[in-house]
Amino acid sequence: MMKRELLLAVETSCDETSAAVVENGATILSNVVSSQIETHKKFGGVVPEIASRKHVESMTRILEEAVREAGVELRDLSAIAVTQGPGLVGSLLVGVIAAKSLAYALEIPLIGVHHIAGHIYANALVQELTYPLMALVASGGHTELVHVASEGDFRIIGRTRDDAVGEAYDKVARAMGLPYPGGPHVDKLASQADEEIVLPRAWLEDDSYDFSFSGLKSAVLAQVNQAKMKGDVVNRAGLALGFQRSAVDVLVTKAMRAVREFGSRQLLLCGGVAANRGLREALGEACAAAGVPLVVPPMSLCTDNAAMIAAAGYLKWKRGEFAGLELKAEPLFSLEEWGAGTV
View: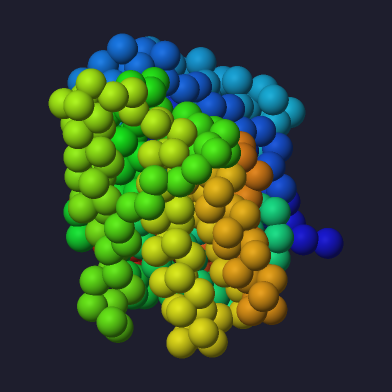
């Protein structure tokens, strides 16, 4: 019988305060998330200083709730995992300090975790992963294609050159007068459209796996401004559909080309934008046609949460790669170096 290894994980990279207890890297015993969306909504985006203060206010309560829901005692924990980066430095610091304090008090190992590794390994909480695989990471701060040759062996083959896709969704939503966060509202509006306002696709160089969404965002703004100058009513649904189809077309096309080129046995969809219905459907159809399994976590594991940090932290636990109490928050953090164990 496998020994029961319990990791308590902490996630505070942006505007969610989360703590979770996960058994043997796969079984979620608790996953408590406190969102700050209502706080930041009035500003149209995350205000870093406010986010940090909210983490401080919530941290103790969230930790206690996670342990209580898991039905365990602090003395049962095997290690503490925490998001080390990337993210907002003030927010990261709150989680790192809390994790270091707990690890020191309980005299158990501390594990620093890369946030994107967490998003990728959130999929391991719902399905066994088969290597080599390709991960499409799509969120408010990241748009990346990551080739994972074996467990924890990351190679970024494509990344955004400007706006992340989730960031572009938020900016487009703001231009169309939709609430923050914009992604779900644009996705819903697109599903209601009777016609599409066709918008350009940014393919970049023929062999590139990189992404660019700033031009697409500008095309939406141009449509909105032209309608206003003419005194016309903006066809928001048609514009939302055009924006979504353009963004999704590029994401899906490049992801499937990467799957073919690298001989991937699975495609993983990761990050907050993985909750987007249009992207899920398009990737599902493309993967079915190509005969490649698509792995997508449930909605609760798409957005930032601590269970995914525990899943990624378990990779380090198995290798015995622990951090010292000098662990620092790293707002700019290399996924490839973290996976190689050099950070």
